[in-house]
Image 1 (tube, rainbow, N blue to C red):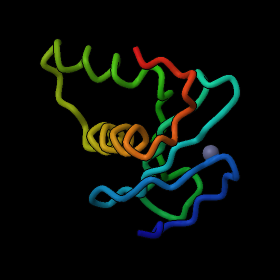
Image 2: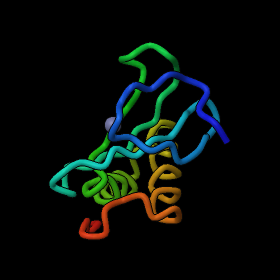
Image 3: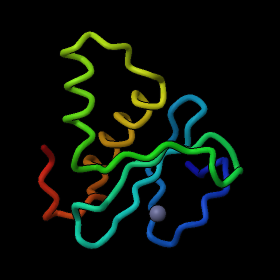
Length: 96
Ligand SMILES: [Zn+2]
C-alpha cells in the first residue's frame, strides 16, 4: 500500500489508508510527543493530528458524553490500530 498524497515529514511512517485519509504516525522524542496524522490531500494544511498519547482518552470522553465522533477521529482511531499492529509507536509510549 502506498500513500496517495504528498506528506513531507522525515519523522513520519505511513501506516495505511482509511476512506479518503492517508494515515501517518509521526514518531518524536520524547515519545509522548508522537502523533497520529490523517491526511486528505497534497495541500500541506489538509490533515488532522492528535497526540498519540492522548487520543484514546479524547475519544473515550467524546463517547461517554454521547458526542458525535467526526470522521477524521474515526480515521485517527484506525491510524492508532495500525500504529500498534505495525509496532510503529515508540515502545516507551504509554497510552492513556
Ligand atoms: Zn511527521
